[in-house]
Image (tube, rainbow, N blue to C red; front, side, top):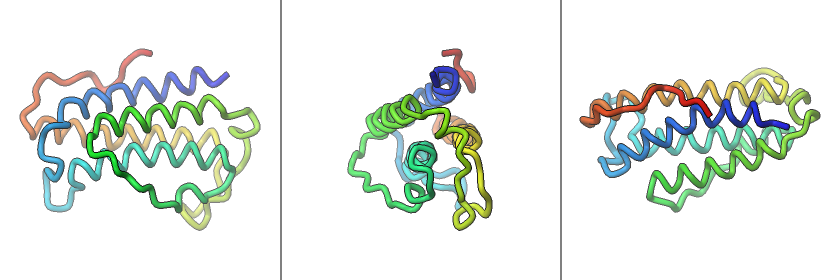
Length: 152
């Protein structure tokens, strides 16, 4: 039912995974500027944000966005694979009702949004930060990089 949505997500996440696989053995504290997030924090932020956005749509409220994720995995690629799997599982479970419900995120973002629009925001958020990861990878010396999206 949600295969188009899942494929759109995975067309971007697959590139995120490729970038993580290239930089996973580099310095996790690397950041291209003083105001940038360290690599590990950026990757973790990307993975947990999309997961939380999908969880919000499934639950119909902001609670998952407010919960702190306890991350014990230190291998960034394993972490990415785990969060990708968990996110896809939620996406697969979303019903038409989940996607059309309006979720009140006024306390978090200042607006109410339909579930489908929040999923789209999550993907756009990841695309934005994936651009950051390309910069990190290049600055870490990686030159054989993928295109920004992959057909799934």
